[in-house]
Length: 68
Ligand SMILES: [Zn+2]
Image 1: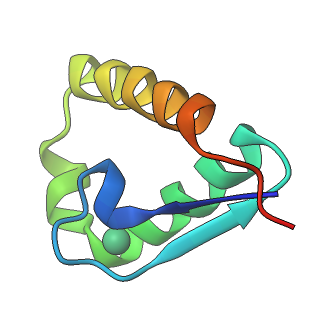
Image 2: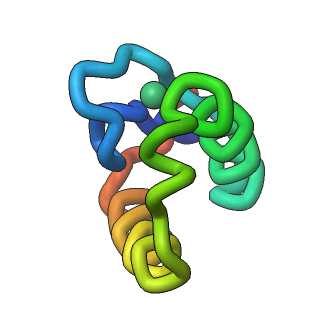
């Protein structure tokens, strides 16, 4: 399992955390959270922004140690 904080992936000051076995699951949790909590940010996001976000996320996932 790995835990990714929303604040690590652009959710400034946000305390939401997503924990899952795979990056896909965490992305799904983050996506659902962002639609609700960061609707304004999501509405402004371009396909380029999403692509950059995915790259940032994948790098962060690699760098994040496994938790129990
Ligand atoms: Zn958030």
